[in-house]
Amino acid sequence: MRKIVCIGESILSPLGATPAENFAAVCRGESALQRYEGMFGVREPFVASLMDRSLWTAPGRTFFDSIVIEAARRAVEAAGIDPASPRTAFVLSTIKGNIEHIDSQDVTLACSARRLADAFGNPNPAVVVSNACISGLAALLQGRRMLLSGRFDHVVVVGAEVQSRFIVTGFQSLKALSEAPCKPFDATRDGLNLGEAAAAVVLGFGEEGWELVDGAVRNDANHISGPSRTGEGSYKALRYVLKHTSPEELAFVNVHGTSTLYNDEMEAIAIDRAGLLNVPVNALKGTFGHTMGAAGILESILSMHAVDAGIVLPTRGFSQLGVSRPVRVSAQAGTTDKRAFVKLLSGFGGVNGALLFRKGGAAC
Image (cartoon, rainbow, N blue to C red; front, side):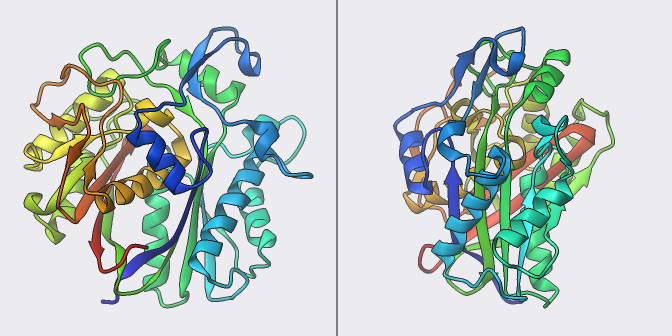
């Protein structure tokens, strides 16, 4: 089977406008999380990582469409491909898209996807992946499958999310938000923080760079908003990707790490059941917040950069282990000479996913 590799990438976030800028900020221990009062007309204060709308909103476009198209443009430019080719496809990962404009326009995700493809003169219908918090991971897996179908030479996978009154108050109603910067896997964790970002990866065929080896999505059907207490879905997704590797090959598992009581516990159980207790674990939500539809792509890109640099990134906010299984959460930056990692995500509705990335040859 031909290898599917990353040939271009981009990240737009409050911490930087390139993958290199964002990676450097993470290495410096920076965080974009801030406390907001009155933002979006929300009564209760909340902590989030928000982008500067005045900086990124293009004339005639919404903020969401602007960052989606700009992230795609930068990744396409880095890859050096023809975005208008019928052999190129676009995949959009988002959960709520333009929901903040629901009172004034059609906010269906299909409309945003069409505008994405149209911005590049691409003749193919853009595919939307909206599968709760694993959307970015599932979108990368969808891109891989599209390439394997033989219909395309390149797939541009874009993930983005912007926050709004609808999203913030929804999470507040679930009592899921922390009033302080989040603490993944920590004994004192008390909820998540939301975030905004756009990230894109161009997938194609090749022998060098970062290979998207394989991935799996598993639904444990446990609860509409609560994860399985036995980590069933995440365990089964991990078990699938581990068919292609061994724990000894992995630099780390980059987990979802939302800082909610049950999600972090579920992931720890799944990691234990999969035989990965000796593999370092890290999470990036303490730096960027939960960027929802962008998370799987943003966190995968930064994990690639970390392995390229021989680094296991730290888990910002983590201090004392607060889960029942002795997972090796990285409190400080570490070193590694391994060439592969697993990206793990989970979400509402019992969805869980895992992707295996392996480095070969030159960097993408």
